[in-house]
Image 1 (spheres, rainbow, N blue to C red):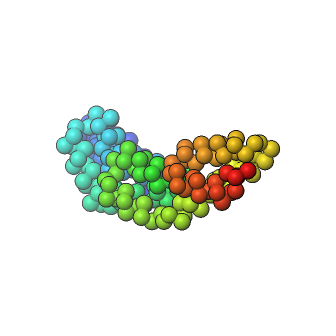
Image 2: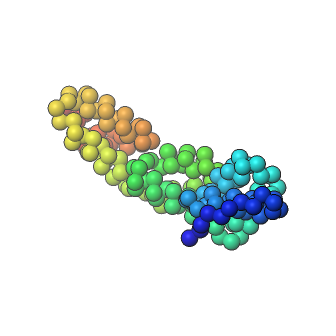
Image 3: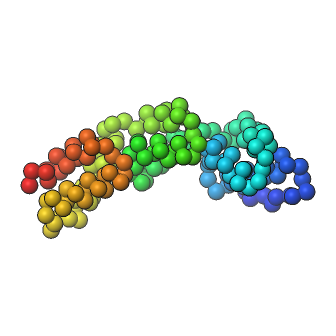
Length: 165
């Protein structure tokens, strides 16, 4: 496990950048893009930052495809987010499209539907006294915020059997 290291401001820029990068990786894994942005924010020059990130990739401390897979699994299971939202989050973290696609391939359509249905069921169980149109509106809003598409939402609502009430 990585530990925080004090930055020696008298050292050469490469060792300073390396220390900053390692300290950033202590809290959680980061993508290549996130680490480059962090180094730039801390005032590290671009060529030094790129060299530092390249060295860390060679050592195996930065791996965008592994980061994308772990992020996808975590966000899908704990936050119950759809593939669309997860892909957007990964893009903002600087992960390349190929790594995003590989990570999202691990979530099949059935798994995404089960996630949406369990969210809707949990919400539906708290709304027994409300009118059915209010129930539909609230469940639709919840699933849309989580990034699920219209097809999945309508399928969930049909299975819950609240559209016809």
